[in-house]
Length: 343
Image 1: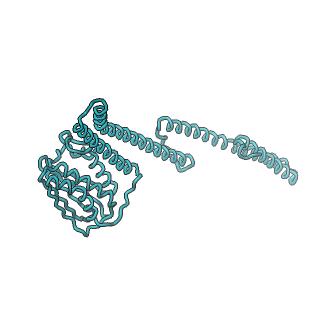
Image 2: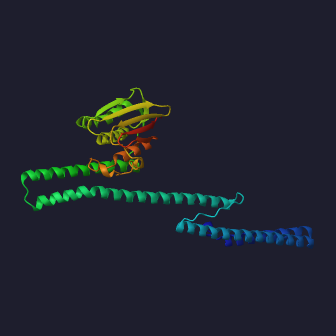
Image 3: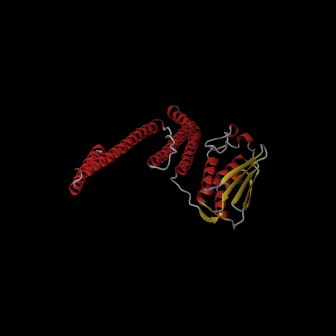
């Protein structure tokens, strides 16, 4: 007989029949040996009591198993339908308690997964909304320029102006897409930061190299105080990207003839990089918003940018165990302090 197909009831019946046969054989053997009917009656009484006890125990166990299976099915249905928490069972350590404990852990994992999926979905919707808002203006401008060139006769001089405007909008779209690719790769873990013990001086120099030309055009004086012997664990490429984004903002919002100061200090647990500008400053109520993706203040929309540099900088610094603080006063410039852990 296939043991895998044997039901519990049939198995119990077979066991009872087997024990009954063994008991009868033992009683007959005892009678043949003793020739005493009292032994037979005592043996029969013992067998009946044993069978009654076993039957009572099996009935009790079956009752408990039925109740437990019903509760288990009900709990799993509730978890699947509404992720209701399984009832807590504070009985002594037994099989039912162990299964209930595993169900509680399963519920917690399912709830965490559901919250994670909901959060990712909300982030995706926000990202799609942000991208659609950002690309709307350059696409509308490109469509207008294209329609004008196709539908109306345009003098050569005007045509060149339209083409230059179109080129500027295309560059803006390309910059937006590149920034979004960097951000999405970091957020989704496609790119992992490779932190190595290396001098911060070279990383800072690479970031400064990207802003010196624009600073010279605006006659902005840039001063740097960074000891060459400061070494810490960081990803050179992405840390340079974060520093560049903050420095680039400093150049954009500092008026011509202004100053930008960069100073680096090594503390016990962190290396602090201060980037101070003499720009317009940031109102206290807006300091928490400037790191949001695509956030830009209304009064600076005439300045080139899409509002993703500071968001990307904070993501990069945070992923390396650091953080960024901002101190600012309207009309008196701002100081961005980047804290990077030594190890």
